[in-house]
Length: 262
Image 1 (cartoon, rainbow, N blue to C red):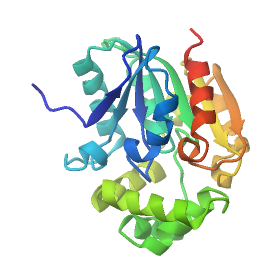
Image 2 (image 1 turned 90 degrees about the vertical axis):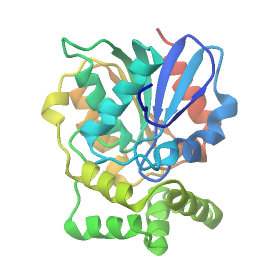
Image 3 (image 1 turned 45 degrees about the vertical axis):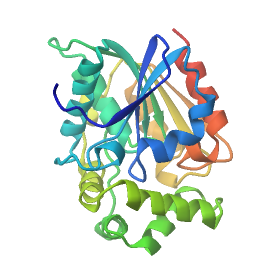
């Protein structure tokens, strides 16, 4: 049996869904608060950890966009899925968007039906000044003070210190610093927006009202909503960059209502 990327299945329903995580946590850290609200009769969810994170923490790799996409496609083949939806979060929305491009190639044997992109990074990447990238890299390499500041900023300073501390602790526990630094390079330097422009895969873009400015509605209107004619956007009040932890029931309802619309 070929080695597959780390993953956990949840539910036994006919509709297949790949679930991907963000830079600040593996799928268990992020999505466990949502599990009790997921419809396991309607869906089978595959919670997938990219290399260097969670169940894939000890799988070495380059931690690039192409590698992540290839790993997901290999897992889909291993699971025997031909049609599937994707739930992505922040940086992993890049993998989801790239997958929609790859699965439209003539030699592809699978198809992405719909994508849910939660507080996503657009296909143009999340470019930032050098000093900001250095600050983020410092956090990735175990500067807890910097990491806490990032979480506070990404949640609009609305979450208590216990929430912030737990996220930072779990980030360091469930991922390795080399992977964190590599994925930072990925999402801050990538740009495949010309390939993405005009893509017909349906997207649901979910924005947290308290998120950082770079992830709010105006940015999504100039990127996702401009590139993807079958995209729709919704804004969740009362949360920032991590609605699966800040508003798990609300997010579960919004996501599943969308995915159940055949």
